[in-house]
Image (cartoon, rainbow over all chains, first blue to last red; front, top):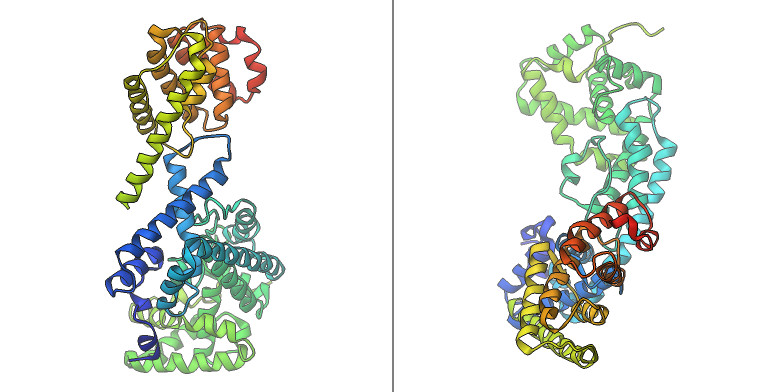
Amino acid sequence: MNNIDVISLIKKDNLDQKNYFKTLINEAYNIGMLNDADILDIQTQLLKLLDKIVYKYNGTESSSIRKEILEEISNSNIYIIEIYLKTFNYPDDAVRTIKDKGINFIYLEGRKRIEKLLNVIRVYYIKIKENKLNLENMIYEDTILGGIKGFLKIYDPDFDAQDMKITADYPLFNNNYIRNLQGVEFVEKYVKSLYLENKFCKMFSEEKIKYLLSGYSTRYKELIINIFEIVLLEIYACKLVNKNVQNLIITKEELNKIYDILENKTEQEIKDKLQNLYIDIKKELLVKDIEIQNYIETNLDYIFKLIYNSFKQKTLDKIFITEKYIIS
Amino acid sequence: MDDVDLDIIKQKRKLEITKIKNCNEYTKKYGITLTDDQIKNIIERKVETLKETGRIEFRESVIDKIIKEFCDSPYIFQQNYAETLYELIDIFYEYKNETMDLISDNELIEFMKKNFDGICQGDLDYLSGTVMNKMREDLTRPISLNNKESDDKDYE
């Protein structure tokens, strides 16, 4: 039993990130932290909050509202409440705060947190524009120049806080991890991740990256690809054949050599080899950058599996790009 | 949740009945009043219309506003008073949706009244079918509602 188990009766793992408030209340009710009267009180408070926000939306101009707008506002309120409740390390504390301070207090704290997240997004937007790669990949350019800016322009934290009004078509290395997030939480993670990916790629010459991407596909400017992942995989390829990673490309002969190196090795042996290579990469490139280290490490298993499966299926050429033509 | 909802609905209904009854004091100088049954029917009709138009009413009801605006119309008298209100409520909510909430309650009611007494000469079908429809089209163009209101020819 770990510390969290002792301190919190409600297990954070039992709570659905997309229905955090609902599952939190259900869990609290099931273990007796909340009783019927508490539930009724919370529901009344939610209705009062809804009434207040609808009035803010409608003003004195209109006495009725379309049902779908009411639902949007209601979802928005719940999203704002959840933003604050998720900040508690122990769900029990979140439930106690609901009981002691009430829904309106939590809503206002959630609203403050959204403002903070928006400020973080603004700062990262500026930083991303500064460390952006000039590779002319359309989706990458559109997301940075149009998507994030557009989000900051039209995001409506008062009435539509949960909505993701962002054209974030550029896929990230950690897409799977942020997919469950919504609204401003998603965008904050998205811009932070994009910033780190750019920072990592900036360790290499843009010309080398362009050459690498041309080897990936001559149509790389139009493709929906994650540049960071292509670069990271090529670093592994270089490391496997003891080549300077700054070359960022291998030859066909070196690709064949990789097959030889991995031949007759068990899955675990390949994994260990790749793990050791990652330690080398870390020493060489990421000594001072803990954030990028953490970023890569949350998805390192994916890289291992990708390399292992490609090796088994004899498709390493799809992930380790080889020189296609001589740089002029 | 249902208990809370029911309490709120009951309180609202009571308040609404009182407000409409109070309107009788104001409208009797024009020779028109509503009976308790008619008030009940009007509220039920409004609830149905809200359901049909997918709208939810918050805070004050709009019925007393419609009554006070229309009670001095030369085309409304005791015999057609309740029936006309039913229709006006339908038209009101239909066009709240059709105009995508771009017009406030008061603006919409005033527009309806001006044309009901003017170009429509009390014809509710003409009001709902032609005048309101034209107004909706104008709004999407977009042309100022005020300009169009003053130009009755556009609704002929």
